[in-house]
Image (tube, rainbow, N blue to C red; front, top):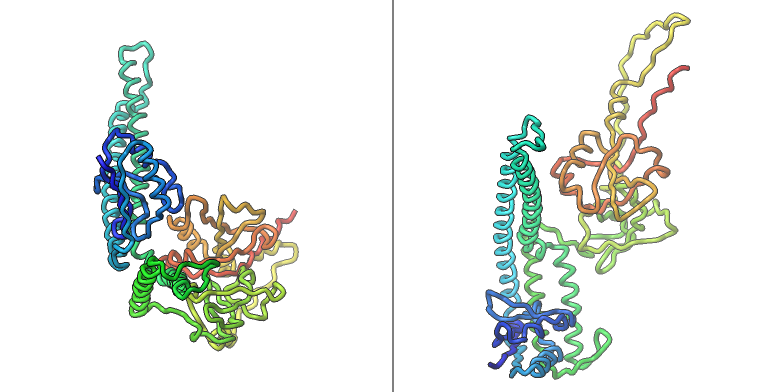
Length: 459
């Protein structure tokens, strides 16, 4: 039987004509194919054929396929190779197919998660039912006729609990996979990410146009008559048009796409949770004081430079707000309110101890203030790292939210962090938890006033 190797942009690289046990699988499973030279072929039960992952919507890497043909022929197979790079699908069609498959994955993974959760619950109930025999603390009676059964019950309980834990972990795994698959479309169409993707695609299109004119691009030249350049030009044009439409749809829904026309020198830009004064307006970004100046501050002005003129750039696709210099001026201080007259109290007799305390409101405010810290196992530091200051109740709500912890970090809070600079320091807030703060209706501060220490007791 002849083995047919075919490649089209529409279907990718497929291998037909093999049979179980004929020796072709060992050659196809070698991790030496694809553009990375590390991809093996895989068997697809849906297609009932071998396929090369990530080969769809791409041109064939002919030297790699010729190497596969030679290996199969050396093993005694009759092989044919057919390559048609012109047969392709439109980018919109390909993107819709990717979204449909992501939705199907989400449904499938959701079913896996539900099954694992049911298995975990059933195993837990089984272990609990067995344990009811020992709910009053009945020990295993060594030598008694009940000893074998008691030991079997103990082993069954142990096995059921282990199964429950294992299935619970599987349920969480598939639930995470379902969440990732369900958010595929939102991830792909995120405005900031889409704008960065467009910049890269436009650069690739300019390079292709230079090659078609016989010029050098990206450090090398290509044959202007290569038909692959024409196909690649069509693909890039379609993809750019698709993502430009995504940006237009986002703007129609109220998403602001920032550009050079929105800023002038002296304005303030919100970049990663901090307001910076604009020093210069560039085609693709604004120049701001170095982001190190933003540690522990919500507003950084040009006069606040503490790093000898160092600057940073804030790309427009990562900007989240703008204010004019007038809008950033501090509000006028309110007129002082006359304090009510308080009747003087007579002084205590000489010799009696005088009991003094801070006003109740001030004490409550100081005791109610907490500092939220971030702890990461991958960033060992000698000082604690602080993100925000807020009330103790708000700090408890933030730190108990499951979205504020991950595999390698977590948030915690304290009311006695020590001395700023010696025991702890402010670290930049990258804005990744802004949604959590918004959902909890919390407005944190980036300044800390240490609580007043109680006077030492008299000896």
